Structure formats: structure tokens, C-alpha cells
Amino acid sequence: MAESKRYISQTELENHKKPGDLWISIQGKIYDVTEWSREHPGGALPLLNLAGQDATDAFVAYHPGLAWQYLDKFFTGYYLKDYSVSEVSKDFRKLAAEFSKMGLFEKKEHGTGILLCIIALLFSISVYGVLCSNSALVHLLSGALLGFSWIQSGWIGHDSGHYQVMSSRKFNRVAQILTGNCLAGISIGWWKWNHNAHHIACNSLEFDPDLQHMPIFAVSSKLFSSLTSYFYERKMNFDSIARFLVGYQHWTFYPVMCFARINLFAQSFLFLFSKRKVPNRGQEILGILVYWTWFPLLVSCLPNWGERLMFVVASFSVTGIQHVQFCLNHFSSSVYVGPPSGNNWFEKQTDGTLDIVCSSWMDWFHGGLQFQIEHHLFPRLPRCHLRKVSPFVQELCKKHNLQYDTASFWKANVMTIETLRSAALQARILSNPIPKNLVWEAVNTHG
Image (tube, rainbow, N blue to C red; front, side, top):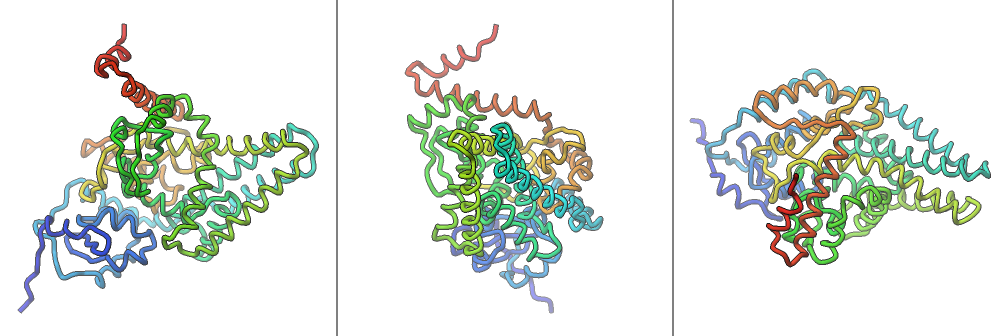
């Protein structure tokens, strides 16, 4: 006689969502991933953020079909009582299965080898310009070319963190260390840790690190309540300094983006020298040391401090274009307070993301970020296929009356500045003793 199934309620499942006790539901079966969280390739944070609830859609989005066979060893023997699947999730899973049958997750046609050659060419021209020319203009252009090489290396780092861009995992790792740590001075380990958290908790003010830029930026007045960052494990205090800086953020946005690399350097160092478990820490640190050897030496070869400063500013500022691109996709979209929810995975990804409308010949410039909605729904999908699957995602959103926001690159910039300006005005009001409702009405009165 078949053994009867054992069930637990959603309330009981929610009791298992703390470090040392992590249970998740996948297709109604309950898995204990507590021990696995220490070895999980994506880190413990995604499991912690989705623990105590159904995580089927997130699992489908992040894992290949082969991953399903490893779940049984984590099965607790329990099933989720009254488990049901929304129509949106059903269609999302069908779409993911269809893309898998088409082989889209395996066909990586965007030519990483060609891109590596382009990066090497840009880097070589930049170095040649510094070493073999006495012209200040050439030195300025050399700095700009180096910045462009960092942008392209950033796309490889981004892609290789989501899926294998090279012929083997070993070569994939080599590409990551060379383009990320050695060439750009940014830890690929830190990037994956940060970026996975962003994807899982897209536009959560408390859980998405890509929206946690206090005291410099605040995309929503909800941050004025001094929310807690569960990623950085600290309180994001909205004090007098933050109020002042945020009050002018729509003016400081682009200048700050020109030097945003400095923050990435700092985050990389903090990550690599922290007490947390860092896979291949030695490789990562060695790669960073390579960068901090060749870059200062190259800058020192310039004839005077004026040209050295010009070179650094030019290279950093050009790379700032990429930092702006990362912000455009999310800053002006819907935000929320609280942990991510696995039950409305599709809806949260589409609500918090903006696509950039552009011609196909400009895809190289955006590096896949122009199809950010598609990328967030199918992060393992190579960017060469994002344009191809976009109509299917639009159709699904239309069918279920869900947001699918798009804007031109120019319009997205305007929307981002408008979002920052709106929060800035509210920040200024909070520092004014006059009742804020009257001031807000006066500031926003038209006619």
C-alpha cells in the first residue's frame, strides 16, 4: 500500500527562514537547503531571501534542467498543503521550457572570443598612445579608449556571471579573472554576490543592493525612514548629511557616475578581505594586485601630473556611461519595501525593470541591458537571444495585463533624473519647518 503524503502549511514553512534553518518549496515539495546554502554556487543569500516560501519560478529562472536531479537529496518528505500555481507562473514556466527545447540557453552566438580580441586591441592602442606619443590629445584619447575597454570587459563579466561564455568552466573562469580583476580591478566574486542579490530582490529597497546608495542617492522617499539594508547588514540612516546630498542628487548624478568605479574598487577590497567565505579568494586577490600594478605604472609614464589626472578622469568618465546604463533600467521603476516573494516572481521582475528601445545595430553599446526585462526573467539566456525572445515576453505581459515598460535611451535618462528630482524635493521639504504638505503643494503647482 502506497505511503500517504505528509503535508505542512504555508505558515509552518515560514518558520524555516533563518540562518541555520532554511526550507523552500519547489513545485509543492519541501526541501531543506540549510547545509547546501554553504556550498550553493550562487551564495547563501538567494536561499536566505527566498526561504520559507515557494521558489519554483526563481529556481526555473536560474538553473538548467540538469539541476532538478540534485533536489531529491534535500527533500524533507513534506509537501506544501494547498499548493497552487498562478496562471502567470504557468505561462512563465511553459515559456522557459520552450526556450530550453529550442536550445536557446546553450547557443552562445555573441562571440566572446571576438569581444576579447576587441578589448585587447583597445587596451593595446591605449598603452601605445601613452608610451609612444608626446601629444596630450593622444593621451586624452588613450584614456577614453581604456574606458571603452573597461565597458566591454564589464559585459563579459556580467555575462560570465550568469552563464558559461567560454567552451569550458575553466576557460570561463580565466576570462572572468582576466577581464574583471586583472583588467578592470573589480572582483568578479563580489560582482556575482552583489548581482545575484539584485536579481532575486529586484527593486526591494531593503534587499536590493543596487538601490542602496544612501547617503548619496535615494530613488524613493520611502528611504527617508532610515530603512535597514539586509544585504549590507546596516541601517541606511537618513540624517542631515544624507538629506543635504539627496536634496541635490538630480544635479550630482552624472558627476558621481563618472567616478562610480571608485566605489566598485572599495567594495571589491571589502569583499575580498572580509571574513565571509570567498571562492578562489587567492585568485581574486592576485588579479586585483595585477590591476593595481599595471594601471599606476601606465599612469606614471605620462609626462606630468596634469596629463596623469586627465588620463584617469577620461578613463573613469567614459566607463561612467556603463554605470548610468545600470541605473536606467531600475531607478525610475516601481520599488517596494520588504523581502522578495517567490509567489509573484514574474510580476516583481517586470514591475521593477525598464527596457531601452534601440536598433539592433546598437546592441553592442547596451551589452544586453536594453532587454533588461527579458534578462531578469531569463538570466541564463545569452544576450544574443534577448531580442529574439522579447516578443514572447511582451505577449505574455499583455495576456496577463502586466507592465512591460520601455523607453528610448534619452527618455530613460529623463525618467531617471525626474525620479531623483522628485525624491530630492521631498528630502528638502523634510528639512523645512513649514508643514510639508503645503510646501509640496506649492512646489508642484502648475499654472
